[in-house]
Image (cartoon, rainbow, N blue to C red; front, side, top):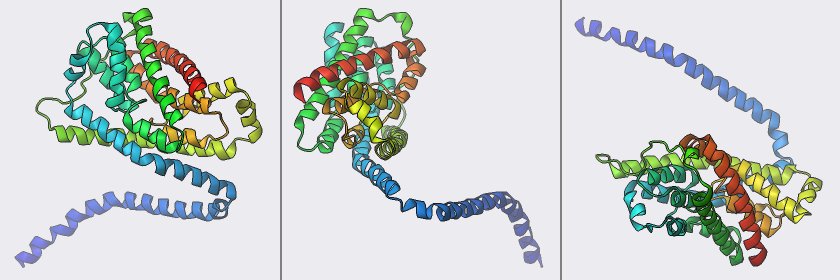
Length: 336
């Protein structure tokens, strides 16, 4: 009898759990029913040739770019967790004018995604690195690192001139922007935030690497999918007559793809595949898309405004766009 009495409270304890789960189960059932209804309605629509073409382009861009996004975010997370920030300040020349191109060259061998470059630059400034050099690294790291250049070579097979043009135009933009800050920059435009990046004493480096990699990959992966969807929509939905208005003019096509790069906000490890899919545009215009995108886009403008202030972000992003377009046109006009 005692055993039977002791077993009685189990259903009473389980009852509140069942009551809490009942709304969740109801919502899941409604979601399943809604999904079935949507699939029933669009079943015939999915067989439309235009929709199939959209799916093909979207999947092609995503699948081709995903390995490079994975590798780029893993390397960025490893640098953030295992490379001390003092390494950057110790290797830069003391003269700011010389530190700018050296910091730009550091981006060639030290990969980083756009999302990571802003807090890294903020950390470098906090550790005594001249802002001009930090900004040159901010612009070059996501634009000319080995992962991005390798992805560009695969997206444009048999066209090494495009890889070289992207390297030179991106590096020139980063260096010019660093020197422009030395010449015209003002301290009141810059509001450095007190944020820590890199390894924190007492914390596991592997845990920091895992968390940084997970954050960057999920964040950048979402922009990759959105960029692939936008590129696919652009390819199948925009009338040819509208494209002819831009593709027929060298300058309009360059300006159009520069603006498109800012709006799409595609990760630098993936933007070469999006650019390669824009076959109706000239090589110089597609080069501009790849140079502008990693340096100026909507998410970077938001990150810069939150880190350094809106006054800085407005001026810096505008100047970077102009310089990037000019460098792309000059370098592309010679090499492409």
